[in-house]
Length: 320
Image (cartoon, rainbow, N blue to C red; front, side, top):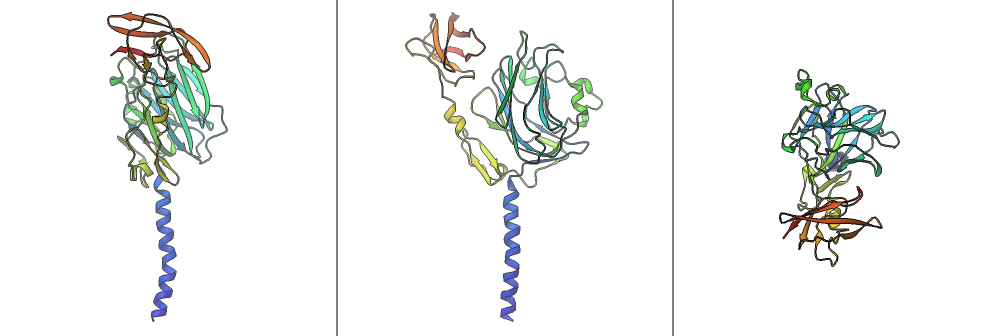
């Protein structure tokens, strides 16, 4: 009798272990999109300022679908990211004129292979950069207005996977109405990070959605003990803290005065704050191995650093 119990226990334990391991391994799946007619996930508004960026990871076997959409609530500016025949394609308009949009398609192998892929959208004033698995493509929009929306607070939410059906009778509420008819996404999304005018990202949390499920949950939703300046990143084997942004934030800071008395507190390619005495003389800083001249203009107690090249770092100077 006792031997029968031991045998039964030995037979039962492997099954228990398999179940537990399966649950642990699936805890970093991400938000799952079911590809249903009502599928969408609403995330907080993104401050798409001059130097903002947004990144996330996705996986799918679907060749064509909407990845994300946002706009200025039906006026002119919009951003749409979609899969088209397995390639990531970006449409963005921010110059306030209907026909001034930028269309960028990533030069990669088809991405509907069921594996995780990372996408990042970066703004650099008139330039928009699309990075997919480290491959970079960029374009410049011509115009004098590079604000995304008149007021960031009045812009729309970020919609992943589809546009809500509530727009079916209000297509004029979308700056790009065709986004509503793009095929809904079927797959997983994780690690949505917003760079809201800073070089330290924040994780975006789901506001609400339909036709999606968070069971099993993304690893960082299960456990996140990361400090504020090291965002939690979900991976296939669990979660971890990514502190590279903290380390890189002050890399390549520029001396904006000849004697180094003032510095920009952000790395190259991002807006920053000049801290130091006002300067009226021309200054020089190094950018990507070359010298680029900038002029320092003093007005009403605030010093503005105006770059003479689109490749320089643009910083707003504040006298302290």
